[in-house]
Length: 240
Image (cartoon, rainbow, N blue to C red; front, top):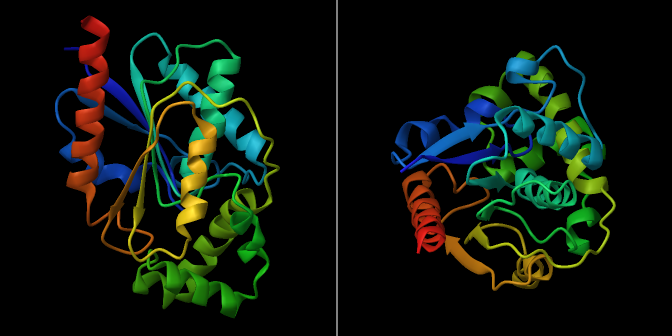
């Protein structure tokens, strides 16, 4: 079996190295391909993108270099989950081969009013740091190191601005399979999570795992198992 590419889109503040454990632990039939936002990691010399449409275009171009000829899936956490949805819309609008599946973790539906009620990118430095502590995804060695914090703060603010200012335009539900996984201790309401159902004509597989917003690090093996099982089901159906 030819491995299925799984394009992984970063969360706010993340980069392509954020999915290293997923790369290392993925089964043989899955090829994890982490993507990169500008302004960090291997693209540190590039300017930040603070607009959702421009960021989606950037990610689309990265995927185009790999190509859409073979079966693939898309996975995104938090901001990456919303980018994944708008990316799927663009892929279908461009009449490219559609993804087998969208895997979304750690975020409410993009149409949720609660998403854009937050304006974290405008917070004072002190309040911004407190928000990062609440999310439980920024290591203490960064939060307690002024130089490292000065490096990461503008990256996070740029990504939060994308997440909290995009213009949601309702569209015809996509004919795509979605799995949405959230943490049991995340600060989001069930009805806001369930708004993902508005984005697809198929029944969304909603799941929960123990943990706060970055539960994906403690549950990498389980998330990979879900991705693996779903992809195997899709590929078996193709050859039946």
